[in-house]
Image (cartoon, rainbow, N blue to C red):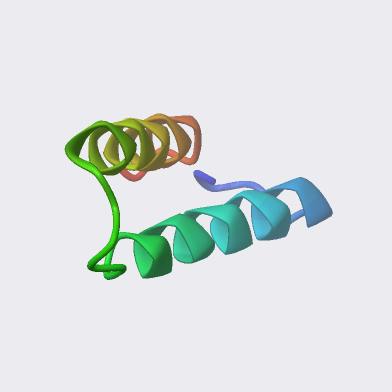
Length: 51
């Protein structure tokens, strides 16, 4: 996100990240799914300047 204004794109990415974080709590996820979700979260955080 950085120092600029908060845009619709920022909001969308934040909601995607929150949804992925929620999915990580699913006890039925395989290790591969958990790894893929964790990777997606890291990528979103990096794009948003949260890494």
